[in-house]
Length: 108
Image 1 (cartoon, rainbow, N blue to C red):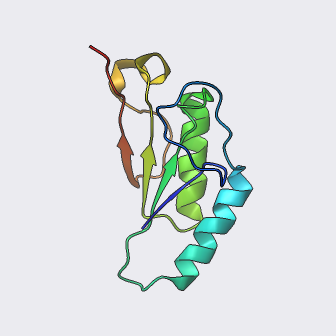
Image 2: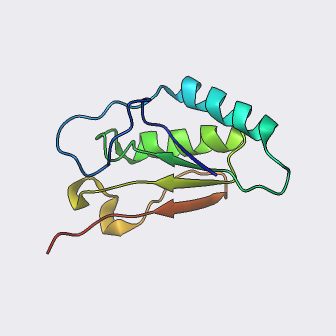
Image 3: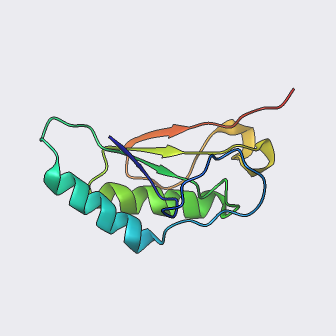
């Protein structure tokens, strides 16, 4: 199962313009509630749009760590523009050793 930290008016990550994200606290509530209702063998992934929304790597890592504490097994850090992606395309920084997936689309 994958739960995103977008607001409830879900739209594609590829649309132009500003993005609103759910607060970290709201996403933590979503993850805790989902974890309680899942079978133990179910893998819970959360996706953060912190980079897409222009909040930077530090905020993406903060959200990733907090989401793992709230019950996520893996975090997908979405980046749709190279200028908002981590330098060299690699997400580095302090994280808790959890499964982390990152992408950055490159336009040709």
